[in-house]
Image (cartoon, rainbow over all chains, first blue to last red; front, side, top):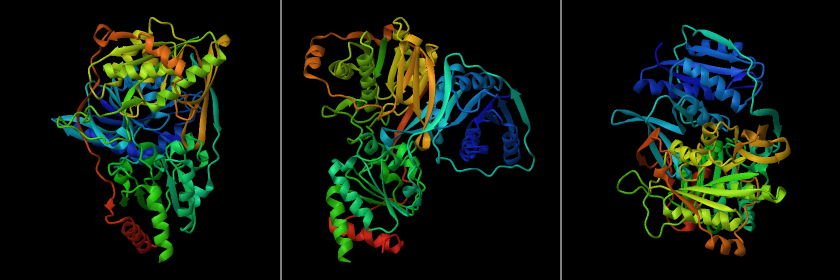
Length: 324
Length: 259
């Protein structure tokens, strides 16, 4: 059997997660540099219909692992079941979504396969005829171009980094379902619970004014609320450190582990722009950022950049608004 | 209980980060400041909290890096950890997480830890891999992004809540020994106390040359570093503060984003 590039499909609530198609796009780019066959793998307690749907939508071959114990994610089950299957498939590259789940099992899976793992991949290129994966380091200020020194390599792919491709699905791919019943030895799943109420205010707002560590003092948050007040249909959000420090309620957190938002305007004040934050706001209509550091990563995704100390600039901005 | 906490020294990420002439390192000079990776501070604190609940706990802290990284081990001792280990490496900026995890594992393997803790990732290389790789190399269960834990030494297990997307937590129980990587916000890391700092000053670290441990070839290498491309226009406003404010308002009005 030839070598393959394998995509681990994501699904939630009986639907294929759109990130799956982004992973396909990444896998197709890998194929440009390293010709391999492309396959999808999907895991869950009921995956037959989802596997059919994927085979129809992508025209690729799908292998489903169906296990009544896989009602939801378990690291031990994933690394063991995927490890066996990927060895079977002679996987050269494995594309996994860079989510809290993907990042939980990808490194250990790579060890199972005697391979390497590169997390948070945003871009693929070639360096001296070798395939090269770019990932953000130093809070997104720098990109590291990394070359795998071994095969297979397990990759976690940054959501939003690759656009869903146009796939030739004129002929549906094949579907193979492998049934297992895996009993975990070292861990026990106890379910998922909701702890942070999502704030519908963030979802409904047309304008989000968001604060980050650059605000310096909790007392200065008042400036953010005053600024938000000049916009109609606005809400105040914050980056993770704001919530960790207890300066803001968790329901206001924007980012991978908080809310994903797409307001018409996102005004980032004193936010450095960690990839976890950017993942939650990059789809906003228009992004303006205020930060003292001209190299802050937030400026890489901004439409307008203001290099200023927000505690001085926001009062001037409000004053100018009131003048006009 | 015997706990190992893995800590890393990182450059202040909010400082000026520039690529040097080699294209493969971040520029550093005498004025460059370093500190403990923030996520690791939460891991040290969590170990200290466990020791408060289970007083017969000993806490070892390990760091891997060049000579200067001994500072973060000392800081952890200053926070209250019992014993410090420093695996001394060359001065590379970015190490392969597989190599790092292999070195730490080869130390941990002979020391019968019940629990190994680290931060969810390092602020500099942002790989988030060392914890789960150590777990796999030592055949232990693991959980990343832990935001709550409750240890039961008598039943030989630990209850963990992992922070996942959208305000949810994934709850699970791991059999000990286990590895946890700790998410920020799980606790409030304490400052080093004067008495502990004085004790840490006198206390020798266990230092090990990385070359005497089992070295493994890296599974990834750095080709070069680059600055990220802007994904949007990134228009930088110029002028005095009132001029910038007025320009920003003008742009927002043209887009009907403000009245």
